[in-house]
Length: 292
Image (cartoon, rainbow, N blue to C red; front, side, top):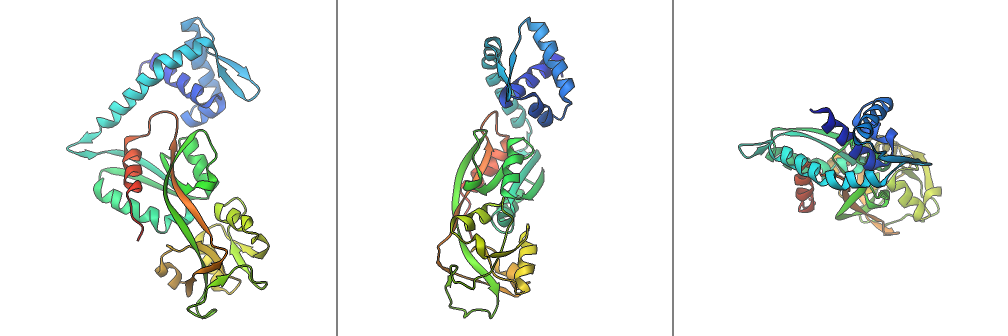
């Protein structure tokens, strides 16, 4: 790659993130090395491209002109490079997907099974994380696309696309309640196993004034179901959670009478730059994907 090309790409990344440190982390280069590349470009142009601010860097007028003159062209080049990976109708490459733990057990797993069946030359990497972690992975470019609850997304760096509403249910030991019971979570003796406080479903419990009912925490669904199977309490999970997963722990799903809880599932991609072609294809598939 021509050094000037590399310096321009580095410049665009710094401009996108308004931070040398964030750009260096995303580009996987040292901050000192990135600074040297920027200094070389500024010397070549005879112009300063950034000024330092209290929170990072801001473009100078020369920097704004350079960004306006190059960003679109590099986006077109990246799109052309992605398109060139198509061989005999099959798209090759790597796709990094991040999804919250709950979705990884049904929606994301079903969606990716279908995607892989149609893209057998793709190297797929899947990361199951908490809501804040999924958002951060996509923000920093460490995941190409993420699936998360909309309540976790509050970033101008991300574009979100609504997929479906996820209705919640009560999961408890089999035989603990009648099979036709409808659960009121505000009952005085209710005990819940919940996710840690930074998870979207825990924040949902807080917003419904149910946080005081949480007597134990777990940061994965498997750990949560194990605690519920011990009789510590019930837990709140999406009603699409596979019954076979609950059967392994001797648990069952019951509908909620009060309060009715649900969360909106969205796909997230970065709002700046070009969305990788594979991620765009997965997004389009997700928008038309039906829940079982």
